[in-house]
Amino acid sequence: MALRLPPNLHSPYMSGMYPLGVECLGCTRRAFVPAERFGVCKGDMRQIHNLRLVCSSCGARDWEAKVFLRAGQSEAWLEGLVVSPMDGGRPTF
Image (spheres, rainbow, N blue to C red):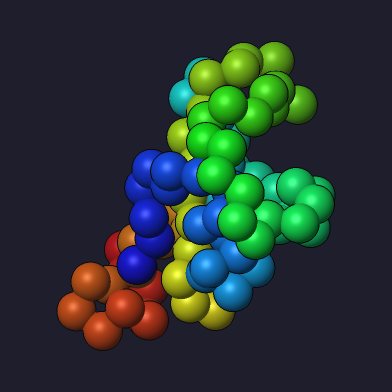
């Protein structure tokens, strides 16, 4: 399961420092932003959507973020798979 609209930068810290998933709303390109790039996230209550990210493919500044809660979910999301809500682990199509 991935959190669709994580409220703040503390969320990646609480999820085990998995990378932040970012999807461009202009061209649907998906990429990871390593949690370490934000610096120390513990207790950081700044909203994730205040980050100034730009798509390197199309230049759009509109994006959606996802915080992953388990190992393997980020890779499945990057490949366009949906993580099963039933067991929370195996990707489905």
